[in-house]
Image (cartoon, rainbow, N blue to C red; front, side, top):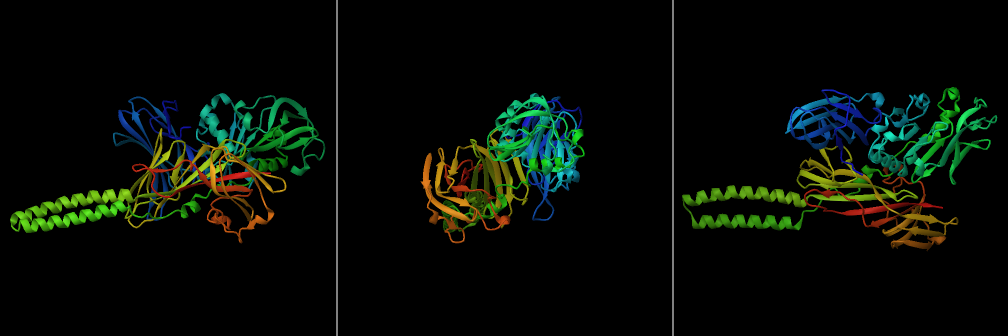
Length: 580
């Protein structure tokens, strides 16, 4: 999957200005990657060019800071270009500024204001051939914004769904959704997203959704509701008949029936949840039925919160880095050499010639010390990081969240490389940041002021991982399959209790659990106290189910200093939900 901005000569509405489209039908959320589409009109000149999307934010210093997302391309006279890229919005009160530079000279600029009504607390993205208002959703708590989306505008990176709570597929043309968009949507669902399918009676759902659907969808039929059957969703629904799709629910899901006819089927898809309605409850016949609001509430689920709190994780990382011993040696040798050279010149040439030589030595020394300072700063730049791998149940995928702290003693520039397939940003607006996207990943560059602490960065991606665990019904046997991974200091976390397991090897392990070995967290030697805290506000990981947790080897994706590779503490934590 390519997370660098996609660029093409795709068609767009003819215009002499930049055409910029944000989010899902204009709906956006603050603090998460948002899809941005930019159409660049034909340019008059050729040469190396840059598309720069500047997102302002309030920083700790006076004024604003700007996070700039940058894509380099070659400008061709008379050729239009289309770009799709993820941008994190932090301050929607100020316009997004989009610029195009050719040969370092700005040739196009546009400011894009973000209407307050388009900023959602919860976003429902709707794919539908026919207009749909979903006005009932505005009565749900959490400032729900309904966003109609054209299939061509769907993201090609699952991270761009971060601001979406529910995707509704009502009756769309799957031919307008390309392979990358399909893969991104399925990955998002499997890693915790929620999907609602409302097939047109008699119509087949998009075939690419079949692996995650909780029911097969068949032909249409007319159904009648026995009186009081759906009273749990609110009364006032007439008996019908109504046009419905035939559902064949798969085992293990939740089903609502009218008589013997399945009307609603829902089930897990990895860490996500998918719901299928046999009837379109937004049809005019149901306009006065209050029960449809309850159905929407079940499909939408509770408000989403990130599984990993990147801010809390960044606070646990070292905020400074010790100087490289080589730096001390270089500085000491340079100072000693300089002093000896001055003394030697003063003794050998006590005349005017000596003064001239001393001045030349001082000038040369100043340049040498400047180079030494630059080398010392580069050697002392550190990058401590933590990767949390969250296994999606019954899939070969895990969400990878890498949080890093880059420290530059005495201040100075930094350049950090994020690998291909990850979307990266800074944890909190703390200074100007440039994120340059390219085929090999992205490079984040900025500058730390003298005395400033480490800058928090994070990157989100997905990695292939096959790890699973199962607790027996009596809770006394644990079967774990770690695939190729191994765990150090593994333990089970379940509510307020912990069970230490020690180190676990790759492959399948069966362990017998002694009831008296379970410890309450208050009494246990809690190796993971920093990861699971006592209060929800400070939790790094938000867990509500039994988890296997341990330090994983290999450590998975990592951020690197662009010029010097990895330097600093690096660890990975694997979290595996345990089934019962």
